[in-house]
Length: 346
Image 1: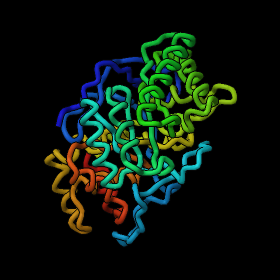
Image 2: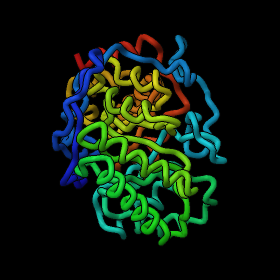
Image 3: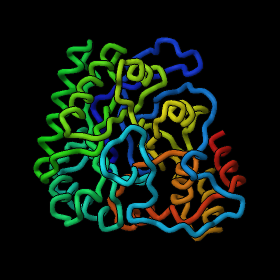
Image 4: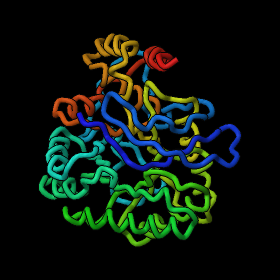
């Protein structure tokens, strides 16, 4: 599978405990399904660990439990949303860098496998192919959750960041219109701006888009506590609902879930299986635990994410992997298994 190669990005390395002004941009790209991580130097310092109790996703002591699974898997409410959706599907398909025809085919495969949540990043360059598949699939629009993204992290200053982000919002709507998608469920900042003033400009543009009725929920990616607070300190602000981060069994700094949870924000992993399934130390443990439930190593790795209180966005080109990755909501890991897995990263 082709690795996702993103040309431009800005990532913040912030000290959670100090909550002082964060050092702001360093370049860094995204990732592929299993192997090489191109965007790994993200948010290196956090506070104490969090949990999934508020989502009802913490494993019990008896192992597997039969849980009815809706199409698209389990869903959770997002704080502050106003749309008619019945919750945010924890499993999503995140399109990677390939042409529109490939995006069209893979989107239909994902829909057939049961996915109803889609992360269509502007960075992938194939939003039109995705939108055409949504139009062709025949599934009612109100059963789907669609997220677009804006890249405006290099615009410095509030006005410049506002204009660049507003342009990005308009470009999302233009691309999605090819599939008769007139409103998005979510719009996400791919990266934070270089300073707090720029972040406020980015967020003002998002709030304008929401006020115009073309998006319901606003989200961020790769935001540290300090950068989130740059938004939350704005008067009468619309809070971010999701923060997309590289959370996985191989990379889960203490406090990554907690600092978002404390602000009412759901973490969504953009690298759920990176350095996990291919890791020779991890794989035997994952496979052994999975054998208790008839599940694969990858499914155990994804279930660990969900039971820690996060969602995930998977990437694949194979139908069997689409099916495998979404079928993780019919079993539950025990506390002992969760703890064992958490210790693997050292």
